Image (cartoon, rainbow, N blue to C red; front, side):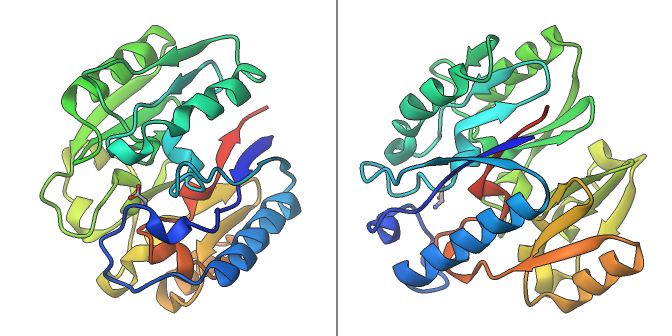
Amino acid sequence: MVAIVRAPGSNFSLGETSGLYGQPNYQIALQQHERYCQALEYCGLTLTRLPPDMAHPDSTFVEDTAIITPRCAIMSRPGAASRLGEIEDMRKVLRGFYSQLHEIQPPGTLDGGDICEAGEHFFIGISDRTNQAGAQQLANVLSDYGYTHDFVDIRGLAGLLHLKSGIAYLGENRLMLVDALIDHPAFQGYEVIRVDPQENYAANCVRVNDHVLIASAYPHLSARLEQLGYRLIELDMSEFRKMDGGLSCLSLRIPG
Ligand code: GLY
């Protein structure tokens, strides 16, 4: 398995942000990013490390630029105007991995952070970044490859920039969900781990082989996952949180 990562540039703090958590410290962000990379390598992934992209301050959040599946990849079309150009470089990188590379087309917009893969099924968030046209285009491509999907409209749900701000699929039919999503019909039939509201940020975790990478300092959720038998790697995400970024956003993970 390969993961594509991109270190933040020194203008990282100029990216999109609600500003709720203060100004990020660039040097600390670099250190946190490096620890994240080391954790992926520890879990057995081979990294493709891209250089900082100073034209796009949010470009460290590579997950938003594409949707990766075992059968195809789809270039996104980010919903924030400042991020649209991020896909140009990533398209070239992904051509090295995929012969089947699709594209979300205007007027569709779609951020990878709105897409949660759960095996053969995909949850497609409709948000302030991903519009209905983009969501439908993605659904059509996924259907062509035999995948199923549900749409999940998160517009108006406080605290959820992206669908994956509030959900993670851990494998074996198990979902981690924040309260705002817990009653959505798309998630019925799954075993659900409920996230305490004060720990919502940690819902955006990533299962990588035998480990779960999770934001540090969320003790209730960590304890619950350990009770369930998961091996955790806790990572300080403070500087990325200040830019409204989650843990999954920092990599594009390519199966195989
Ligand atoms: N800063 C991450 C985003 O807003 O897309």
